[in-house]
Length: 284
Image (cartoon, rainbow, N blue to C red; front, side, top):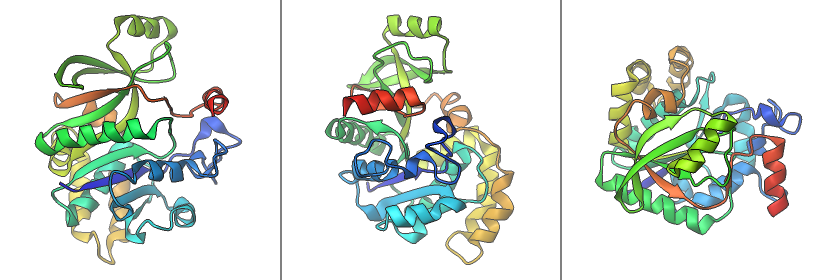
């Protein structure tokens, strides 16, 4: 089964203002002084997984120029411009609808565009393990970062028993905790940071969205006949803003019983604050 990668790149990175601004947010900046912007590093990380022809970027219309400048290898038809930000569930639904129209039987990895990952080889092997699982199962796999401290800035995933080493059943998604609760999570040993990276096959995500986010899929069904036509932009502007403004975590992950997780030990950060940025920079 072929693999496609969807990179979500529409955020404004407001917690890193004034380095990150709505005009040029953090995913388009070389935050780590490595000679590559965060979105370029994200693409580099996934190139061992699939060819550049299978990458898709979902972003705001005003950021398209950065994609074209920084990622000239991305097909223009694979740069998807949301007419209005509606959170990650509609973003993912639109990208998967575009993929399904021409590639109905594929695996899909969905990732943020602006995270730091410190061991690419480990990361690639983890994604390949997830893809092997979703090729054979109608399940969703997410990545859980083994925590090294009781962080309060991340959501957590509560994991159950191992079903196929190293894959575990997900019991619950937990909101960002206070310090006391975060400490309890660490002591329990089965709570992991939610990295916001998801793996599934096309049929699975379509079925899960239709079951748990039917309003969004009703909108996608209105847009679907116009995909890859001269009317797509018009239909998108007319219908996409009608989507419920909701994250994929709330829309599907917290409701579904078909979510699994791989514990990950590679260094990871969402670079969501100056403290996080400084901590990563100190290690490079």
